[in-house]
Image (cartoon, rainbow, N blue to C red; front, top):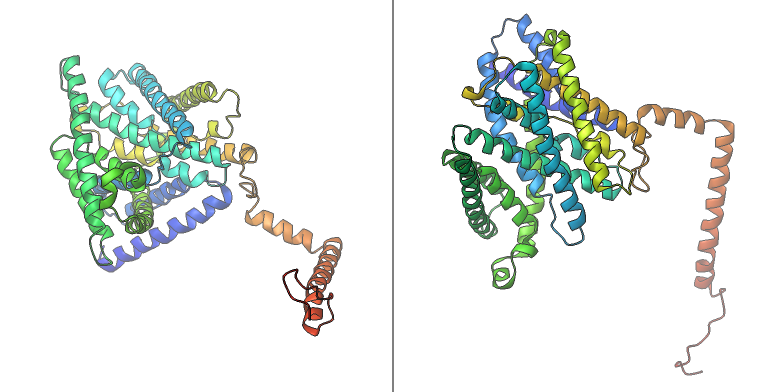
Length: 464
């Protein structure tokens, strides 16, 4: 493939992704599914032209995976506002995300262990990615829900991403340790060292970058964060904590920069950097998500989905998701409705990213990777149905229902407005508005002519 053909393909993928986002907003069909289908179509196209894509695809996935993790965590962190008013939602969403992650991970590892006769540790490594809710799908899908429901879902999905990623890497990096005490000491020591380094680095970066002059500095900031992440991974630290702490600190400077530290911060400059960083991370994460799911789609073999055993296992895992979700949502919100939140637990980008990050020595020879696709499709379909069915219950006041702004509804509304009765109502409404406008304008005109109300002097005004 020559350079120009490659440029045409990349440009078309981005354009298709924007079109898929528009379709998703109109129909509530997750754009992730459409991107995967685009990738599957691309696979058949490459097979037709005998293009050997294996080396290119897996090399691309590895790079996209690393950059994708960093951008997703950074995007999530700079959206988390830590305030006293939000504390009830924060602790509830954190607790639900943490407990659901742990219970799902061990429950799914048991299913994998029993079905595929896999080693318990390897089963758990494969179960953790399947237990993580995808904020990349949740956040765009809940924009029209009521404020409390929307904030809960955003916090829960964000915490699920971050905690799941940390859980996965702690597990992978400590598999070879023999003693349980060594594992505990390793994890605790790793967390403490990483947090200390993260706080120091984050304070230094915030104070440094607010003093940099010039318009082109945001990608330099992202490059520094990627560099720190890569160095941290080489030193076997939990590098994502650095990204998380930096994002939280940048978005909550009034909480972290107190006392004398406040003198080192120009709040207006930091807010400007934060605003621009929001735009850059959102756009960058969009591009990474787009290419990742398209590339992932090219690795899927649809024939494997006809395997009834694989389909049954995937469906059983999805059912387990929702049983766990129902129990914990009801436990924390037993006085409130848990709909449509109950249906919103999609698997997506993080699940796929972590599957491709499993080390070779922990790779299973019996686990069928098509289970990932089944869980992504099933959870996305359930979420779509739940938003359509119960979206009005959690709808924010003044917002349209999830499907009320679809093209079909708009067409029907236009048709109904063109009826004689509707036309008559429109004419009467326009006449009433003209009458109100005339009433409002007339006193002003009278005042200009001196024909309005008689002028009454103020008490302090001397009589002539």
